[in-house]
Image 1 (cartoon, rainbow, N blue to C red):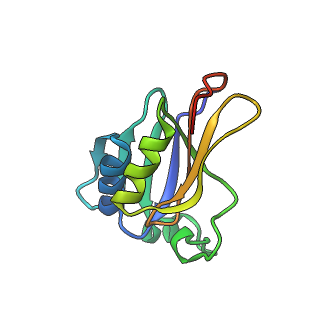
Image 2: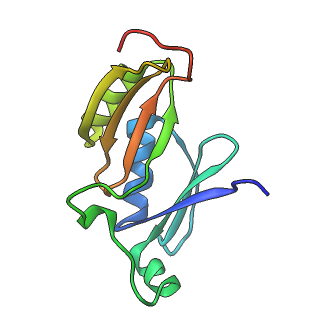
Length: 134
């Protein structure tokens, strides 16, 4: 078994794809003609977005909408980069909110957190052991 993709339910799939392209430089892989599902190229696994309407079809009891939650949900998407400070500032310029500024962690990473307009919490981090100045 292996992780194939992660799907995040969002209010506007095209807007989430555009944000991730602009803020993090990820390339669009696919947007369904209905606008309810899209994917980004992120390496071996795919980061996907689906509309809340599609989520309602999949989960008749409903689901928590990240963008409507005051606090981020109990998960994050981690994007690995060689320059966390630059990636962090690009994400803020693209419309993300700072959740935690870049900081060097004792285990050898520089890490920061931003919250995207669709409510997704993103960790920006260097590879473990590649700690530099935040």
